[in-house]
Length: 369
Image (cartoon, rainbow, N blue to C red; front, side, top):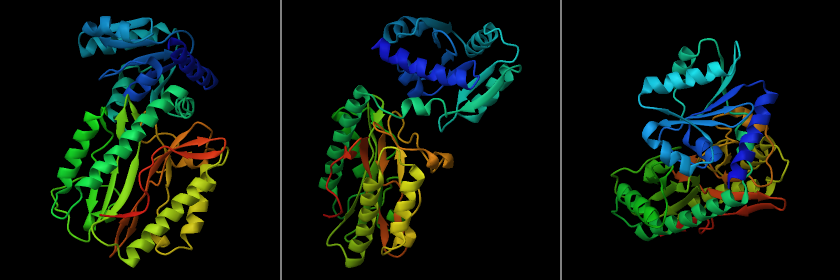
C-alpha cells in the first residue's frame, strides 16, 4: 500500500521539478487522501520537490495519523498561529531566497486561504496550480476502479429507490431524504451534492435541489445524484415522467439519448475532448430540440465529483486527450426545452482500449411511472 502512495508522490515531484516548483501545499481532502491514504477534516500536507512529504496536524491527532498514513514526517500544532508558524518555518528550511510554492486551485480552496498564505510567506512566489496534480490523478488504478464500481452499484440501487417512491403528491424533499438515507444504509459515506429532484417546471433548471414541491401527474422529474464510497464518486441521472409520456417529450428524450450515444461512440483513447464535444454539437444541430443543447457534455469523476477534464469550469481542459483508465461522467448538461421540460441522462463510464464501458446500468430513456 505504501508503495502506491510513494509512486503517486514521486509522479507529482517529477512534474514539480519540471515546473521549477520547490514545494506543493495540499489543502483539499481529495488530494490529501490521494497522496497520503489518510482522511482529515482540515488536511495540510507539504510535498517538497525532493524527499518525503510532511503532514501538519493537531497535536492530539499525531498518534492516530502515524498509524493511518505512511508519511514519516508529522508536524504538530495546538493553535492556528502555531500551524502557520510551522509552515513558515518549513518554507524557510528549504533554503531558497525566493522559493516557488504551488497551492491547489479548485472549488474547495477559498481565496482567503490563498491570501493568508501569501501574507505569511512574503518572500515566496505563490502559484495556484492544478496542471501538475490532475494529470497524475486522471487515470485510475485497479483499487480506485474497484471503489468507483461499488459507488456505481450504489447509484443504480439509489435510482431504483427513487423510482419506487415516485407518485403524485409526494414531495421532492421526501424523495431526496429517503434516497440519502438508503444510500448511507448501503455503505455510502454521503453524497457529493444535494440530490436534484427537479419536477415539472423545475426540470428546466440547469442545476437543482429538492424542494417542498409536491410532484403532480404528468410531471417530468429529473433526478441527479452522486454517491460517495471511500472517497470516490459515481454520477447518475435519469428522467422520469408521471404517467404516459407525450410524443414531444419522447422526441426530446430521444435527442438526449442520441447525443449520449454519440459521446460513447466518439470516446476513444487519444481523442481530444474538443473533437468529441464538437461531434456532439454537430449532431445536436440536426435533431429535434437540438438548439437547446449545451456544451460541456463530459467531465472527469473520481475522488472529486467533477475533476479533470472539467471544461465547464476550466475551458482549457477541452483541448486535453482522453486516455485509457479514465473515469468520466457522460451526459452533464440538461436539454432544457422551454414550454416542455428538461431532459437528461448521465452515466459514469470507464474508458478502455476498446472504447467505453458503462459502470452505471440503470434503465435508459424516458421512464414512465
